[in-house]
Image 1 (tube, helix red, strand yellow):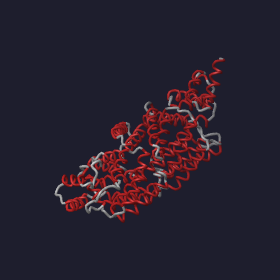
Image 2 (cartoon, helix red, strand yellow; image 1 turned 120 degrees about the vertical axis):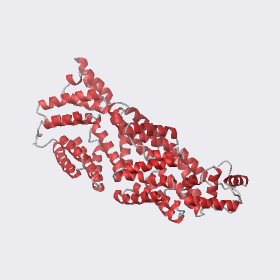
Image 3 (cartoon, rainbow, N blue to C red; image 1 turned 180 degrees about the vertical axis):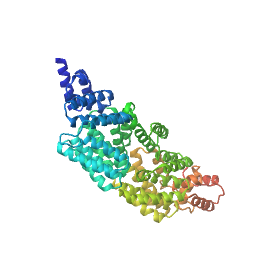
Image 4 (spheres, rainbow, N blue to C red; image 1 turned 90 degrees about the vertical axis):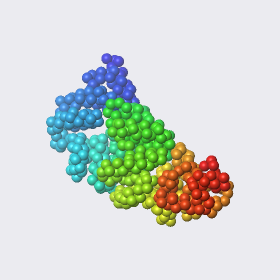
Length: 550
């Protein structure tokens, strides 16, 4: 018995110190669910659920529910039923999840004669799934009132965040974000228990990423999540893996790509078993995005493939990867398929910006213009600087493709400025490359080189190998001899002819139509006095117009 007491004291200490795995070991050694008092059983359940010990968590929650219910303690019993519902639903066992909700309803009203708040929250969850957002908001208001009355911080933060999500899903983004921010202030202040904390961080960041496309909020709440993760020991399991995935999104946006990759690899390890596999698709897709941006194309393909096998997305990342590899038909078919399947503003606004880039490269200017127009209407709906930035860039790309350089420049400067204000270095550098293309086209080579040098430095810091090669290839060399009357744009085209690119591939590289490239090639032949691409390439190298090393 003395040993049991020591184990229990150790378990409580580990629980208070967020050492949840060690706490589970000590709770088991102290007698497990059958041999502990109900409050310790509830602590054991929390620790086990956080670290992914599902069987231990369920056994402890069942014991806690039964004892609380037998003593007429409706609120605590329903709380255990709620977490049982979460455990079974996370594992895809919806029948058992619903069964526990039914058991909880049999207990009747709480001490104040009201329907228990956790049951109101689950009912609101299902109403949201059915698209009945106003009903959900009404139910959640009752849950908040009850939580305030009983001083239940977990329930209050949970119902507040779900209110925000319901409003966002209904299209009332500004109101919804107010509620979401309200909830997250409670989380950041440490008012919620760890189990709720991890869930709400993921729910808030996921809403900002997938429903609102608000990069500023993604960055802010993800940074707060990172601070919380640094305060707790690595604990593994689905909660941890899901948190790491969202934190990695922030790291990638911030330009900390190596750290993001490491976080995603750890996330995949934590999600590899049990209920965590339900989140694996998202983690694997994000892993593919990190590899793609770093230029690790084989690893990116493998990650996208695994994402598809585990129910995650593959687009638009896979289409952009195919474009980088020069496979424009595959890139275009992939993005077209994704657009055809996507429903709702949130899904569309994710796909439309890369669709413009891919479709322009595939010489489908009409489709690209339609995608940009739709993106413009969605930019008004989302009222997000990141969506405005993607729309401005899309308009700049369209103008470049038409060789309308003076129209392209203000759009591209706006896009670059918005990304710079959001402190997203990769997107800013990409806009610098596009700006350089436009500046070069209007003859302002100095401005073009400044943009390219800025992009080169950013790509070097990020480790973006593919983008770095492109930027370095576009940089002018001050010791280059005369250019035989060629314009700066024609020199760019000639450089790519030397590299063996077709007119279509050159158009994709320079964001110009194939017809425009044909005109430039014809002018190059006339000015150099040649009649073939091979002669043009040979003449360019022999005369020093283009360095043979480029």
